[in-house]
Image (spheres, rainbow, N blue to C red):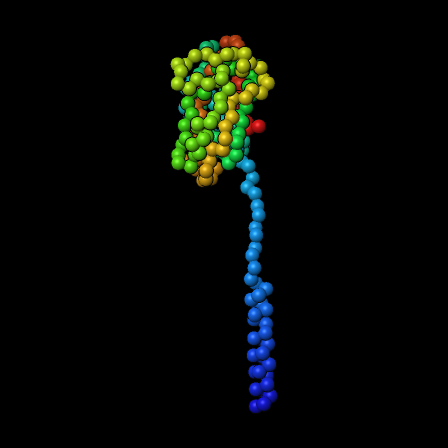
Length: 199
């Protein structure tokens, strides 16, 4: 009986001494620091209409590549909605590659937010390179010397777009409507690649 009592006594003493030590070891503050990666994504809705031009689109993060082709002798004109999502500032440039056609026009016709998760500054502070800016104007041919050749050209730049959501949310993108006019260099089939990318 004494042996049992002493055993209980020592167990109780150990418990009284160890529990406060464990509690003290667990109290304190924990500071977690981290950063969110800067992300800019470009995409074009799959239901975009493009008239008599065959168009395929490949999107990969901050790059969108349009492959355009046709067989008409006259200029081919399409309107394309380019969607920009970003948690940082961005600058969109473009390149045009073709041996059978030239880019006769590239213009920004309209810019709008797709929903409440788009920063108001994204529309208000968007800067479009002047030759490409046709917002609120009648359609006209832009300066062709700006888009000739395969050298990259800057189309527009702006501040952070998305305030939240995911890369597929419908209400956190800036929709930029582009007018693209491609002119074949000769009669017959033509093929061209137009690429937009953040840099």
